[in-house]
Length: 280
Image 1: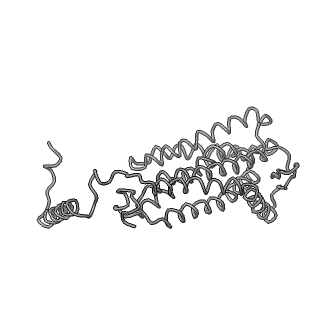
Image 2: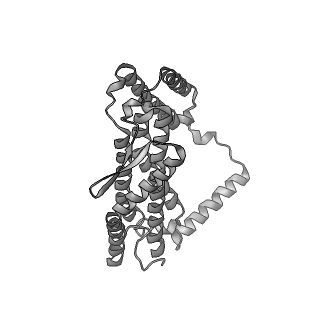
Image 3: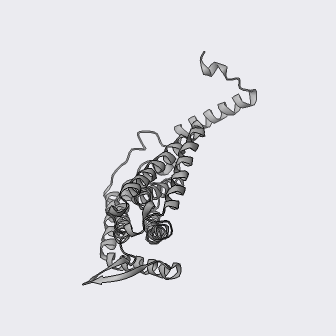
């Protein structure tokens, strides 16, 4: 049987639907929601110049400010390290500075048997809990299972060859900060293509990307610091999970979430033509 025939709408509901349909048709026929033909991007010289400026200027500024930005990140991490008793120090090699984990290599932080048993129990319990998740929780179900598989692989590695762990905490922190910096370099071109083509005022096109970059400039050192705290207090057993699931992947997800939130605040009219002479 057709599912539409099973719906029984009351009189008030039918009238509300008819009124909404009439308003939608009125908006489409007037100047409300632009039609498909009018919503196509009309690239003008001014729009092209705006997109170029949105992509090129922030990237050039980030490249020029990389030494200062890295120094700022190191200062933030070291400031917190002193208060959290983390074995981190700053090593200067020529003209470059890098964070150094002063507690030997990360493999020295081999998990104790009790840590391994507790972690295994948590992995088994978390994976088993996904079988009771409803169909509405499918994304969460597979996310939890992915995290469990990554952590289970780390447990197996430290069970058989714990002293052969090839990664150092120094390299882990450096890769986290470098990956975050390169993501910041990619943000201006991505926003130019996704945000710059919308019909929004020019000051919003320039201000919001700057605010987003400022957010990442503050978030990235604190995220790297959180990784150091976890490894210091819970051993290197969790370093693979932090690197694969809470590293560059997390940064990209944060960017997607921020852009989605930003685009959701734009009027539907802004999805139309990018002609700067319209709706300015």
